Amino acid sequence: MRNIITCLLLLSCIVSCKKDNEVSDSKQSKKIKVYLLGTFHFAQTDSTYNVLDDKHQKSIKKLCDIIVSKKPNKVFIERQPEYEFQNKYDSLFTDYLKTDVLRGRNEMYQIGFRVAKALKHPKVYQCDHPGMFGYNYGKAMKYAKQHNQVGYFDGQEKGTVIREDDRVDEDSIQKNSSLLDYIKWINSDVVMQTSHGSYIANDPHIGSNDYYNYDDDDTLIGAEITVDWYRRNIMIYTKMINQLNFDEDAIFLVIGADHVPIIKHLFDSNPYFEVVEANDWLKI
Image (cartoon, one colour):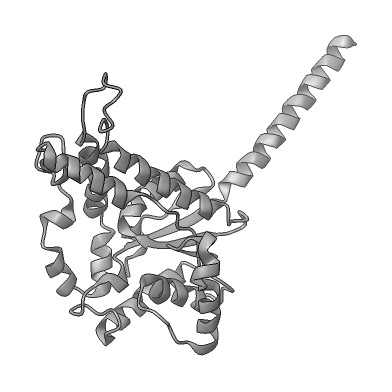
């Protein structure tokens, strides 16, 4: 009798565990699709390339139509949510919903606002985080110039990577392509891989190797660029997932292209998300 009871209890435990696992699996089976768009900063181009020109506007609208077709439930832009009281992006988006007038030429307006409005979203979501790239890069460059290490920044030394946008004439690509095709090029594998590679392969070479000298503040000075870059992007990713209720089918982020590889890796590593390759979803 004891053996029968023991077997029944064991069977009940197995069934219960199986159900728990099935529930857990079902939660993860519906993955949130992630659409990441790396871009140049529209407002930082010179007078020879104005995104407000008719030909570029047609291209931007075509790009927005592609994004809208993916039906993301939330649109994220490269702005800090902590500074909403200063940036007033919520108010600007509300104004755009009423007037249909975009108040700026940067990609947050031209892509983020347009897509969110077309999808009838009540707001856009902000997710940027501050970093110290300028400070760290300036410090590392000063050291590199003083110690004959500039070649590491330029990808000219062994063990370094030349960015694709440095290897080719990017200005020519920009001016001789539609804006949409230029965006596709920016999101291509070779551009993304080499831009990220420069943070991984190049920057850490800069600095002193005198690890036993505790008074040497320049040890690993270049690696601080990489560390800070990862930190910033991890924070951006964190701000994104913390603004989800996990009922979403898809989300979209428009951001400076160099950010994409790390953010993509983080979403790829999270079992609740599925990153859709830009090369696939940007096809018409």
